[in-house]
Amino acid sequence: MSYLLDKKLKNKKNLKIAISIVVLIVIIFFRVGIWSGISGISQKFFRPVLVDGNSIGEKFKNMGAYFVSKSYLYEQNQKLQAQVDFNNARNANYDSIVADNASIKEILSRKDSKTPMILSAILAKPNQSVYDTLLVDIGTLQGVKVGDTVFALGNVPIGRVDTVYDNSSKVILFSNPGETTEGVVSGKNVFMQLVGRGGGNFEMIMPKDFTMQKGDQVVLPGINPYVLGIVQTIIFDPRDPFNKALLTSPVNIQEQKFVEVETSP
Image (cartoon, rainbow, N blue to C red; front, side, top):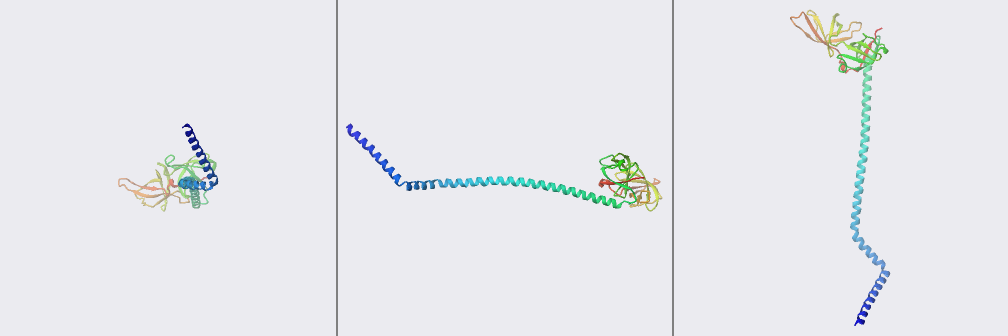
């Protein structure tokens, strides 16, 4: 009984060995076809994965290119904006120089060539200095002296030099409150005193029988009729033996950047 069982197990083992040998022979002789089939099956199985992987890879690649492109465009935009700001600033400076040049030419063309004058820039105006005074950038080193007359626009007297330093001077405007300036009523050759009221304004007291009207001019005494003020209003009071005329300067000093100082010998 035991002998039959052992023989049966031995036969079964020999059968497995025979089957293994047959399989090995088939693989050796027909390996190309089998591996081709396996390759085909693998391709069918993995193709969707590979396709999707390539697609996702392309998307990530495109996304990376998008961010790189956006960053590059931002940097270029910043550079271009900086260049635009630089050009605007340069053009503004150029326009300012052109305007100043035109203003200086206009001033110089208006002045009397026989009158020695020194062109000066205004360093401080009435809204930056003591009320109705100017600070200009010329002084004793440029020949300026106390009492010299100061002009705007080349032919409009606006004040006198009050204090002189080496390279700057303080100018008291004729319109300074309480400042008294001798003037001549144009066309009547009558001397009158103009009293400053501040801000480019004057007042003038005159007899009742002396008639004036709006638009009449009061000029600085001398050969050249430089206009000090223009009459704007006449104030009448029956109880007062005098009338009062209110005048304004022909120029707004706040709008000026340059003045000229008439130097005395």
